[in-house]
Length: 487
Image (cartoon, rainbow, N blue to C red; front, side, top):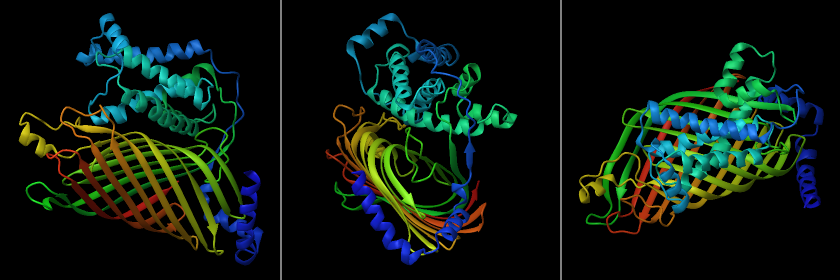
């Protein structure tokens, strides 16, 4: 495999290198000048102070975290679900798991963040990613069986363990970017604590336990913008075919954050040696949406040279989309390739192609009005969503020209099929198909400031196996002018 890969890249470089980029030294200088993001980063000092902390200490810390959260829910918030007893523990152990439909934000934001505290406790204790993931599962299982009156939920176990590990590894590494030296200024230490408080306190108490220190190139950009959006809902079938239910016409503001940790061709020695974090929010007069997407490489085979690269990798992706179009979360495992080619000395082409198996997905039904016709007592409270499995596909194409211009198109397709026995009280089995497409054109005024325009397309098609919920499509198109501040 390595021989085949090397021969393939040799041919690839030979065809482009001789005719397109003859001056290797000047080309490398140009690449360094263009890609400032690949020269910014953090160089850790070699401060390894020993082996991982005693597992008994980690288990005690994770248990203490559960007790702390449970005590807050029970004695401060006075929540009914926190009124646990030995009889509840026995019932949970005897009867096992049951899907829950708590508020979507609790299940897909709250539980992963709680899982990240378990993960960073284990990770900062000197454990690797896989061991820390097992510790996160330990924290989730003990919470599900012993800290709530509700039945243990398989969805919570997955989002807390896998989603929490993805969030946890990202937050652990961000915390260390701020606090990479014991002499770091107070504001950097505050940022490190805010990013991963449990991991920060762990390092303060027991010292640095990382076994491998290295230089990490980092790109961070903050986006602010405004624009307009429009769209519509259609229902197909039923009494009135192709019925237009609602039109959207709105203005919106945009805030975004993008973090790239590592290089696209980074050789992965530990999971998430390369990852991207994308946080994007639109706030309109008639609604909002927020998307948080974490994608990390687990392993890869890569080779690069003369400004080109070719990378084959396995990925872990935790993606959430919360807003007007739909409410969706996916925990996915996939594989793909990433290729970057300097077609001329001024033009680089990049193609990223990824396919995923969705381990656990969720999507809202979007039929609140129809449910209320049959069940007038029904109230929408973000707990009427399906659990799914399925497939995800992502295709990114990017052109980078003359040190200034960037054009890209980022397409994601989700196909979600309802999991049996996971329906809410008012639910139906079926399919959800979702498309997200982001097209942007950006110009760099300065190394620290870019301006651009983007067109975002969001589409959903739902088809459930019941006469009440006839097929529905939902579409939103947004146009935004924005400024990107690069750090």
